[in-house]
Amino acid sequence: MLMTKERRPVTRTLRGWAISVLQEAGAVHECEEHGWAKDRADPHARERAVELARHDPPDGVSVGEAVAEVREVLDSIGDTCPECLPEFD
Image (cartoon, rainbow, N blue to C red; front, side):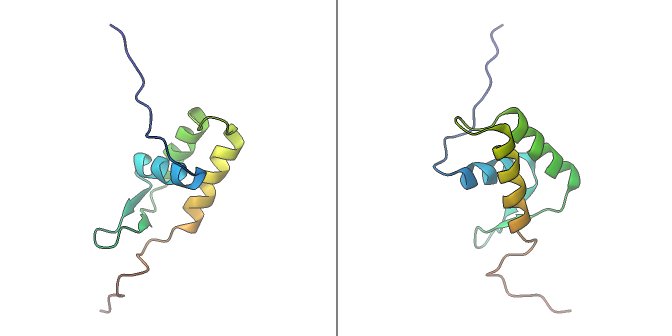
């Protein structure tokens, strides 16, 4: 049986690629209302994202650059949506 590896959709920027890797690994998710990426704060998902970047960087990008971009993007994403109103108890 022939097995093929499914490729991620082509993205125009390295940042866009990194966000898609983070979503695929479950490290981030979108705000349902506004679409902003939110950090899930899951250390296992973060490590999965780094491993995905390490094993399948985009064409023309080194492994080191791919891993660095995933980490940089993850560090720039918060756990709340900037457009959602804060909830007060």
